[in-house]
Length: 309
Length: 303
Image 1 (cartoon, rainbow over the protein chains, first blue to last red):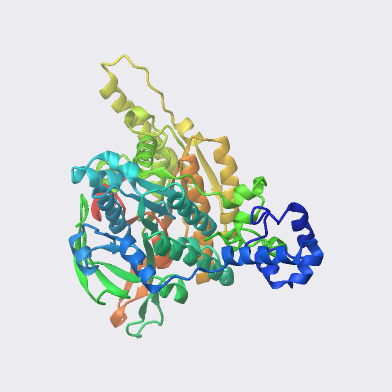
Image 2: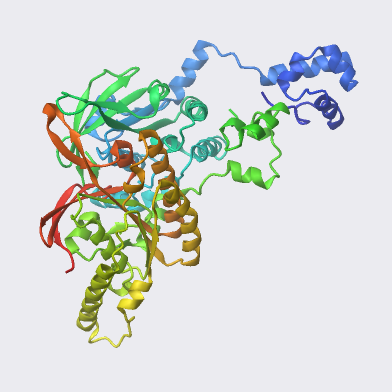
């Protein structure tokens, strides 16, 4: 619902706009919903001109119709699969991360989520000419660890200049950042196919105003969908699983596991991977939910000096 | 797709005002207003390489217990939240005291030339004990000074107990409201004392005990957001201590686990679980650390 501006049509001069604003006609929608005759009397434009402006605004501001074939062709041409180069993970993901999808990596605290994401970043940058964006909400990004991984796999340290990192602290900074990334990719042609957000809950646990949280979550999801579908990017988000204890002595099995961020978020990720720590430096990853991958597929991973293998 | 003004940090009444005059997207607003810049600003983007150089430059706070530092990946990292947890008498506070002293060592021997702020919530700030530790460190410093510098004609900094004590500032906090309020004080203080490299909170769980679950999470996450933002801006490490709580597992078997639960554990960056072996030997298990795998070590505290 854009606000009327003088650069929208050459008949919409400052005088015309001021006359419209004085009559509470501010947006394109307001303009279209007002009778042509009334706009004529307010702005002193000819009936014919008002119709022309209307037509122009409708063309410019309404949704575009695509055929299924166009959409299919675009999807085929622009979708990319990004191998994670972690054998087990590529196996359960049937080849790697696919652009257009939101992946969620969840697990109990200290189960290896950040390690998995750091390895993803290192591998994608090592085997392609792409940049990777890392959004760090709790200071967990460890450049020293990335450096050690690169050293252990004898890769060039300069690769680290293709890893872009933003440290942020609030929900609003997150959304501003995603819109900025949109501009970077759209206008400045940044070569970007993967964004990692580690992690989401710290931003949403800061407030108990659930109504507002819900609104912000919705704005967040909208821009995520735009980035994944329109700009063909894959997004990996980490989330926490917490254990809840109920009952008292003599109550069996009182612990239940709960995924963070509530019910709305449950439906957002296309593929949800659960990571579980087994022994020291060993973990398993399992597909918990997916719209196209077999559910329940799992693999074993090891945390090594060069990252997760 | 345009950014809706809903997603900005604007009070509800101002938002209604903007909407009633037809502003729904950020791009429609007159961007000359300097306040607008603040609202749509994002933190600076850095490359991992920049961050690596920054991390190297900042260093970390060494405990000077070599295998402990090694297991941590160099020491207590700057800009992150490190937790020591354990029952009472397992050396949590002692380790914090030791860090308050070792952070002040000059850089030639691995220190940060820093100062420390100690926030206590349970009256644990024992000056006689800090004095003892400072004395031990000064003696050790004199020893390595003669050992390492006897052949070099270099002048190095002198350390003395009073100077060390003078560089440790103490703030006493009684509840969660003071905990949030102290952030403002801390910001002023660190602005005036830019050499602060360590902020200790001993313990984090005490002021949160009176809160119910949801309130507690909100307070903890807000507190950590602000204190970590400060720590990244002013380059200091955050060390907190936490106690243990009892849980009932399957089969009604009781076991001990660190307090404050899973989402809190997710939020901190490093966790060190402490146990007492036999005085003065302690055991430390580093259960959460992005740099190194889980490791168990034993160490002795300064007498």
